[in-house]
Amino acid sequence: MSPPSASAGSRPTPSASAGSRPTPSASAGSRPTPSASAGSRPPAAWLGVEIGGTKVALRAEAPGGRFRERVVRWHGRGVASDMAQLATEVGLLRLAVPGGFAAVGIALPATVGPDDRVAVWPSRPEWIGLHVRRAMAELFPGTPVGWAGEGDLAALAEAEATGCADVLYVEVGTGVGGGLTSGAGPLPGLGRGSFALGHVVTDPDGPPCRCGRRGCLQSIASGPATLARASRLHGAEVTYRGLREGFALQESWAVQAVDRTCHRIALAVTGVRELMHPGLVVVGGGFAAGLPGFVDAVARHLHALARPGVPAPPVRPSCRGGLTSLRGAVALARVLGRAPVGTAAPAGHDPPG
Image (cartoon, rainbow, N blue to C red; front, side):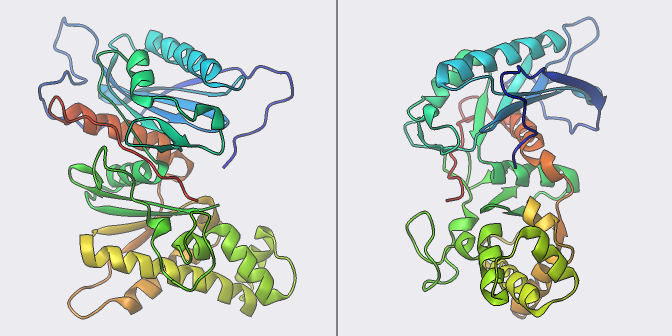
């Protein structure tokens, strides 16, 4: 989803907000945590950073529910320009958080290889080759830092919001993403890659995926794939607005197009259910959120696919909306801050497509 556009030649003004929300406490460990005794320095905060193709957002959460946010658009292009702007924004936020940062979680929509270098990022190809670990270590010296994909972090955010430790998150938008959490954090684990649900093959004879395979879930169930199917069934090009209207009126072409998408998502979720037994399935993403009844259709198919003795988990819509990645980055910071020294390895990410 793209942020509001800025007028040509103008320099966007950073926005800052302060507010409150309940913040889960972190257990004491070998790393400093956001707590302070009377007379000591101000408490440290958990910092979440969402690095996007057109903007960057930062959110620092301190004990007691206080938080600070900054959201700005990138001013230019190129790694040097971006890193300089990011350093400026971090510095400005530090002024508002005198206790510093206990740990930093980063939402990074790029493929990061085992050498910690950006391998693929279509939205900002200038970052290809950047050594992420070194760059973040320079920005946050002496602070645990980790990064993960949007789906992984969305799952963490939903787990915090719902109080369920084992959450499977499914995001349906321009692609299909996913994330899975356990009580210890995101799975398959920090430094082991992302939970690439969109690249689970649900139809080996299905349409080609941008990854090079055929029949990946996102080649069948993404927003663009659903619209293309609706257009074929309708015999004319269908826009998202047209699909919403047709689905609301229960037009057969719209119902069939959406129902196939929901069925394929349920197939993929069923496979995860057999292996990992999540306690809750959360469906998010702009495409799914804009179609009333979409989540219910996924739940209906999931229930039909369940076998005796293995009931389908409950399915709910996202309660975080567009805040999932940034809130998930803060949640990752909390996970890193609780981890023993030496285990806060960054997580990789394989973006949709």
